[in-house]
Length: 511
Image (cartoon, rainbow, N blue to C red; front, side, top):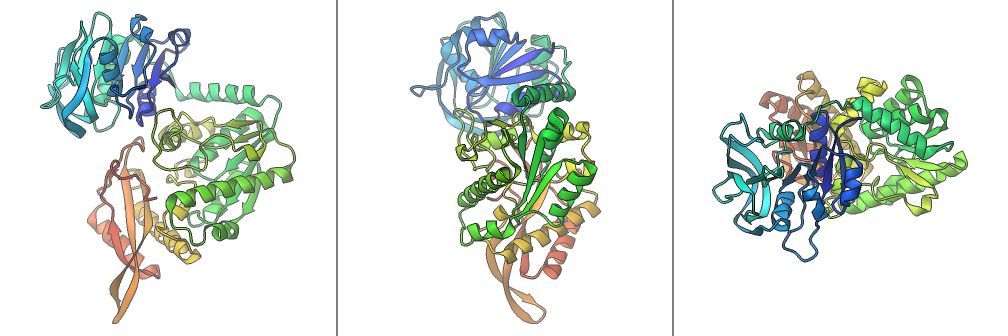
């Protein structure tokens, strides 16, 4: 049996990023609600417990708290950000608002003799995101790190194996964060590092078989990476009892609908129903400019289409979709989390669909893990390694109201950008890149004539988790080629912009 680390989730946006980092260290992780009882935790026989961050303040009335017995189980506990503050308050210390809030990368001074920091440089850049901090340490604890405005940036009671970090070791920007987490997993918890993606696949197939039984499944096959991997997983689990419905809503990338139908009828044959609903979606969205309204309309229309297709296929028992964890987090589906944007494949099973259950086997995975799983299942590389693409597609890459002409403008410009990135050999260096129709029109000169056309924006980011991202440093000569081609080959564009904003504060998509 694999070693397990339990993560108590206090609604932080980075909770499953912690789980992902633990899995990267080849240790099985399981995120549970913060109120999970000590008995339920013990039943999993965990090697360690991690308390996540969260948006609440421990000083608020009704602030989320864990079972106080967690600290007396004899199992190592690591509190991160809110988790550290909660540990401090529950064990007799105090938390106060910081004199100066710390957000982003901060210089942190570390005690290099401390087990979590052993062998690391005495000063590290670490990712902070807090307004409150531990002011007085609980009895038995000592400070292990500090900044200019946070004297207790890390704490420990080594006798009881209780530890706290005010910063986020799980975030990529923390320079040696993975080394710190590995020290907790291996040096403190004694984990063996024997968990592999194959373990997840085996368990997922077994879970699907148990949930479906002898029933049938309708999969909402969007054609993206996530739903494609779900299709492969479901096909392995239940074979021809899987029915896939691919809806072309008219907002996919250039030539993509044809590619999806070819892959899922030839390379990876499934029972596939393809529906061309482009005109139907455009009619529903005509005149709609608000991004949340777009997403909700598209989501509702997907439900309607699937309801109709399910009726044509006859009675089906279960509904499946390719929800992954960043979708869950950004939709506020985790208790205590805040809503960033709506996802049409999150929020529970719509009652009007009439299915008995919802199957979401990728709900706890991140994009890179989904790709790894897809390759392991045997999906073609060209399908699995495609650029990430939102469910609403190009509809949310057109700022403001939609028209077929605007969507085509984005489709053509996006194809040019992807072609030039590939020709420059930058595909593996940039994790996501696309164009956005800004909605801004500006004066230009085309030949000897005045033009008044759209400004197109290029968005390109580097990231390994899609929870945080930096803008990609694309060589100027590549940007120049892209700009020339966009202006010359795509009617309606006379200006090209390059987005140099990180996430946070911006999201990766513009809408």
